Length: 553
Image 1 (cartoon, rainbow, N blue to C red):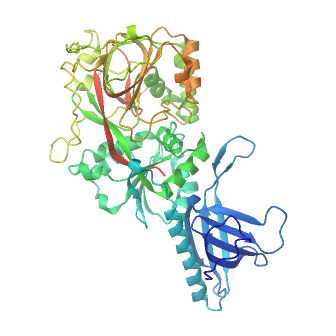
Image 2 (image 1 turned 90 degrees about the vertical axis):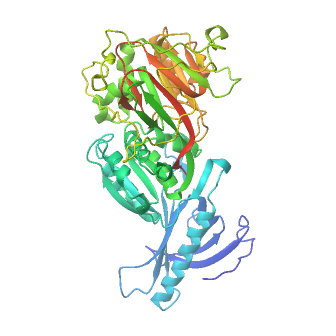
Image 3 (image 1 turned 90 degrees about the horizontal axis):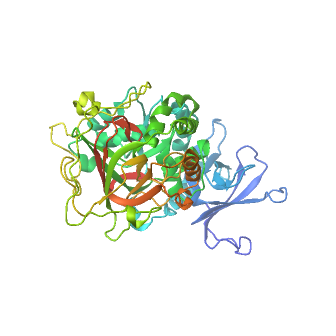
């Protein structure tokens, strides 16, 4: 390895070249290249005559996920080989915007007679590329808790083969496995066989075997993993295990949110997978908020994405019948539900995120009432004709004909039977009055209530543009009854670009809150947590800032 600095006139944009070498391409030994490795870039310059405009490439080490040195398959070949893997942002072909695209640089090193010496040289280069790529990680103050993952990294990959169009396993075989191998990530593949398989597994597993738990599925599998971790007796340590997610389902809301937080423009399908795979391989770990959710029967669940009631929950669950078409199922479900728009009766209250926060958009002050000096009323029981008045096992769901999955309604308890997870400091028991500093919404007729803690509700639904991973805020949206079908459709179309709050829709309300309580009064309906159906009835939630850890860059 020749450690010298070529003249700056030759490479005027390079401030500090520390490694230099001349190699041939793997597939064409007649073409020679000079390679310069700086602290920030890998600069490849063709020395053999080349077509105009194709003689030089500058690859940022921020886009590098790995580099390896190896021998060829021919025992008589004394050369060694060097491959570096990059995923730079490049303009899409025949469309606007940019997306991650895979670039592999492969070189042949044969300057020395001895094969061992050539391999040693290649390994020095590979090590230098990896180390300098790692130094390019951008850590953003309080957002980052643990820096990056240890190297080499050991991951457990949990795949739900039924998610989305049933192609999650092929996503691993065709894309993910190769990316992780390029990044030098050692991983164990686990294919889930039933609902709550992942939840049961992580609740009992020896987590010291892995540095991270990664999901290849929709959002439902991560919901299982998070609740399994918080049901352990050692939940305080377990919930700090870094989690990752790669899009393999229909909605892929958290994957889309992670991509958005990285600064990327809107992408979907394979482009989203490459972006999230790249961020996973880079291995930066950030804090992520979780929300504790209390149901009327007593169980406490933990949520990372959303709590929904009304239109959104109905579309999410009723569109399960269209799962075979992938993410388009939500568009189909939205149109079907718009054709038969429902009104849901209930009571809603919340604790604003700031004491002086007006907490309302799109409505006048006359529709906001803060109960000062006296508690909010007790929750009334469900109507006598509601099936929700029966026991837990007879609790209410919509009586629509479709079959829906139901979340296990058991409290978060350790193996020893004690309650686990962090305490809730803002929530009184569901059967007790709310504190006087809560805002009680006057309206009782709604089209939807949606509480979001991530930016995206699906790949193409930018529901909470201001949300971040660790802001300690629940973004509460609700739509009052009286909105027309056309206006509601315009609202969801605007949500694709995150422009719904700028529509000045008089029926849409947005508030940033720390906790909320919902009491459905309609006899029929659905409530979902992270897209999973839960018991229908009174529910309340509180955000826990930075409780979990997410690999996000």
